[in-house]
Image (tube, rainbow, N blue to C red; front, side, top):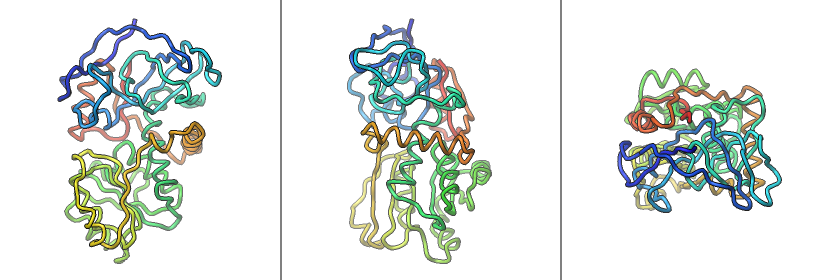
Length: 323
């Protein structure tokens, strides 16, 4: 038996329906994975609403999960039935009890990491890792700004950046989230966007920042640019408040700034890059430098409740869905 959350038309959380679907058989190069935990990420909202289009409807959304390999197709050698695995990759389809997926997108999960932790860390953790070490390679002694610092990526990025020797300014929406960000290493927190550039100027003694990591999107974009030093880099990696639309001339006006819109898919497209980013994440978690907080869990069939909480900014850290 196999059930999944299906989206028949784009819209609100109520458009997600719990349905029985056939159990697929793995094709050559694929593995059948029985999920133990599914990760909740804001990109799932984009696919539900239609901001990002599914290949076709009805669709099963979801990018990240952890589970056990039940069967493999012809030609698969690096995973086998019984292996504990995780993934964070397209195509969508993780909101299911079981699914097939290309085996070269799977990584084996160390024994010390529980399924819930693995499902909560792959997409968010590898995202934090490539943003800090490849998109803009932070250096010890630098001061950086992390938006949504109490969220899933934000908490991981804050801890990882501290491990790399950075001073972290975390932008959050509430006092509770400020306390959580500070508990995970943020040196400074700023609540809301209105005072953010002034606070950055105060904290940096007027120098401003070499990089801003912004997952909020439209509402924070211009404010983030105002926090950068000349030649600074704006890393826009999410659209929680809506997509960014701007005249690139603003980059010249605000100091010959750089702008990038990176994705995990690009940075892990090659198998060797996927393995390297996963290994780096497992390493910082094993060392205790990064702690993965699973602060909320919902039954997979109740994914609509999880989306409602996520969009209302009522979640902190990571959230998982349990089949």
